[in-house]
Structures are given as C-alpha cells and as structure tokens.
Image (tube, rainbow, N blue to C red):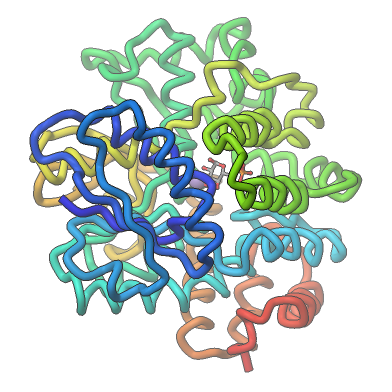
Length: 445
Ligand code: G6P
Ligand code: MN
C-alpha cells in the first residue's frame, strides 16, 4: 500500500512515519512517497526517517520527489500537510493582524483568514490532480486551516477527503483521564468546526460522566482546559471548549499577550525550524536526536502565551506527545482494513448539525469503515455556540468564494464578517497589509 505525503519535507513527518513503524498488521503501508517543493527539506526529513527505520525490520520504503503528479500516481492514501508561504508566511499573518490590534493566529481570526486565502487555491489544485491521477485514493487533510481547506477539497473529492486535527482528541483524552475512564471506551460528545468545538458529554457504557467533572472544581482545575479557561467559566458554559476557543472567550487578553511578546509563535518557529533544517545540511548531524530535541522544545512552548495570561503554568507531561499521527493511522487502518471505529474528524455535515447545510464541513465524531467517515447524530449546540459556528462558517464561505473568483471585495467581506475583526475599515486595511506581504495573494484583484 502506497502513502504519499504532500509537505513531505515538513517537520511533523517523522511523527507519521514513527506511527507507521508500529503497524505490523496485514495491509499496512509498505511504501511512503514524500513530496515537497524544496529538495533540502526532503533531504533533511529523509535522513530522520532513515534513522527511525534503522532498527525496524520491513520498515516502509521511503522515496522523495518534487514532482507532484508523479507522487500522486498510484497512491492509496494521500496525506496533505502543506504550508503555503512557509513559517515566514505564518509570522506575517500574525504581524499584520496584530498591527491592527486584532488576533493574528495560524488558524483563528484574521491570521486564519489570510492563511486560508493563500492555501485554498493550492489545495484545490491538489484535489483536482488527485481526482484525475488517483481517483480511488483517500485524502487525509492536515493542512490548516483544516476545516476550511477540507471543505475546499471536498468540492472536488466528495467524501474521499477527510480532515483531521489532534486537538479534540487530546481534549477527549484529558477529560477521560481526569474522570478515570478509558479513552478507548468513552464516547466523546463533541461538535463544532475545526478549532471551534465543544465537548458536551463523555459517555461510558451509556452513562454521561461529564456532569461529575463539571460539579467538581478540583477535578476541573486539574487539566489543561480547566487551567486555561478557569473552572467558573467552564461551569457557566456547562461544556468544555476546544483550547482554540481561548482566543474568543479571552480575546482581549490573548491579543495583548501576542502583541507584547518579543517573537510571536510563527516568528519563533520560523527561526527554530530554520536552525533545524540548517543543522541537517551537515552530514555529521545526528538527525533523529536533532529532530527530537527541536520537537520537544516546540511542544513545550505550544500556546505558551495563552497559558501565561491564564496563569496556567507548564504543560502537563502527558499532553506533550500530540497524537495527530495516531488519529491519522487509526483513520487509515479503519478505511483500509474495514476496522470500524469512532473518531472525531472534519467531514461534510450531512445533517449532523441542522443549522448548517449538508455540504458544510464540520468537526464531529464519525463512524469510520471501508466506506469512509460518516458523522454520527449529535445534540444541537446551545444558541451562543450555534451563533459562533454559523458566523465562522459564513466567513469560510466568503474565503472560498474569494479564492474562486479572485475578488478582493469578497476577501474584505470575509475579514469584516469575522467575530474577532471589529470594523469594516480594519478588514480593508488587513487586505491591504496582507496582499503587500504575501505573494500567494497576488490573485486578489
Ligand atoms: C495543534 C493544532 C494544529 C496546529 C498546531 C500548531 O496541534 O491542532 O492544527 O497546527 O497545534 O502547533 P505549533 O507548534 O505549530 O504552534
Ligand atoms: Mn488542528
């Protein structure tokens, strides 16, 4: 079985390959093709993978190419994990928004819109190529903003593209742990959009255990979301929000914290990652050790500004291992081997959230089998959450329309309608600022 990884020179590729190495079962991936635009990044990552595979018999073969069509032909699965504009682009997404006093973040608010506007045309091109060259392949989309990008690709690939994110999985795992439940036996009642969802229940053998957590301030305060949002606010909500909702519920504080830091997250990662890829140019560098050290630092500092504003302290050691590669592997196994399972994924709504149309991509628990991912029925969201979800989906639709038409006016509308952009004039200046710094937005006229 052949797996093609787009963004194959990306830093998180060794996590995926590491997960593949643990899979000894029949029908596992035997061939990995890395695709990237940048040869030196491919070389760096291939070195790390070679060291990972060194002690594993029958490790999947790894080849690398800069030819997209060649990479796609014959693929059974395609992982798409690209970053249009690189980390320099991410740093610019943050900087331009913060200069206007609004949130600049990889996936949320103005920063997420800018990132979406330059990523959607590239993702659509990939989807069209997959439909032509590998029509039976399943595409697993990691590329952010993951919900929006998955929806763009689904217009060409239907249910054959599935978006994934590790944050709902991590959230479910943390809640299960504080409740003393086995995450594998618990059903997490979660729904929303990517980076905009809420856990409303956690059922073990049909019994909802979440009320027990919400009633206990000590338990509530003992894990990441409790520390970030505060126990009072979680009790008021009666639900546990995805960590990215911190940017909405504590917008003023997060914008201030982001404005005051010496280097934003994107700028920090731009420098940190550049150093790693530089180190990898020296043939003597111990590749896996250098990668692992860089990864540990990246994970330890994830969302550190948010945690600081909330006085949440360091991340829990258990939260440092991500889990994104595990979701990808579980999804691939469920499809390839018909191993039925339930996973929280980004798929077309098909009636699961009745306030959105059938083609809107949402983040929801899905039953997965050889026929793909099917959203399960979930309870409706409360009014305030419905409002946010509809407003942000409306913004995503404007981004998709702007990417299709190349209309600058539609791009302004996308920014202006976002709940975290507080004036149409700000939206106009954001489009000015972003088109000045991003070559990938030159199509907006
Ligand atoms: C989480 C999110 C991803 C996001 C990542 C950013 O894992 O679910 O969508 O890309 O955080 O982490 P970073 O280290 O790049 O700030
Ligand atoms: Mn994510």
